[in-house]
Image (tube, rainbow, N blue to C red; front, side):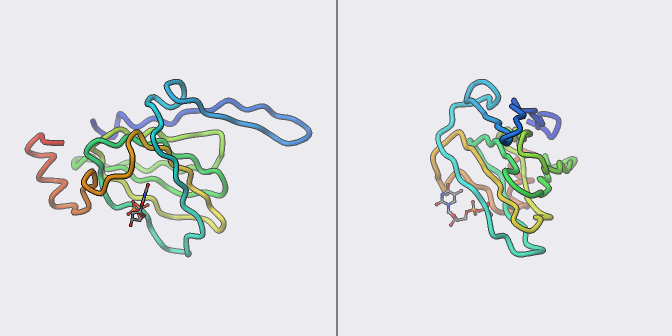
Length: 138
Ligand code: TYD
């Protein structure tokens, strides 16, 4: 997988005088079965989250509130996606290094994962990530 496999997905929107509604479905807007949902919130100004890659886990990230940037890196190039509307999601396939930064005040990042939490699935060292990429192991 490369940064070109990262996709911004526009989600359905029902606009209504009473307020708006959006939704996501697994194996539809999200191209995998959801095994886990978590959210990141109350991020202090200037902090970054992530800074790792996954061996198996695929992700789908929504800015439920506020805004932040998701920076993806495949060892050769990087690309930054700004998420600032709750009707867009970012699909991040396996094997990419990713960082989430530039959180606005009150930003909430909702993340869906394709596997249960497993620390062994994380690659948290960038040099190790580059070695695994160059030897084709990830
Ligand atoms: P981590 O994935 O390192 O956060 P981020 O990549 O967003 O900066 O997770 C932070 C802590 O939360 C870590 O100790 C593991 C724990 N955690 C779980 O127990 N389950 C989960 O699903 C996630 C995502 C994290």
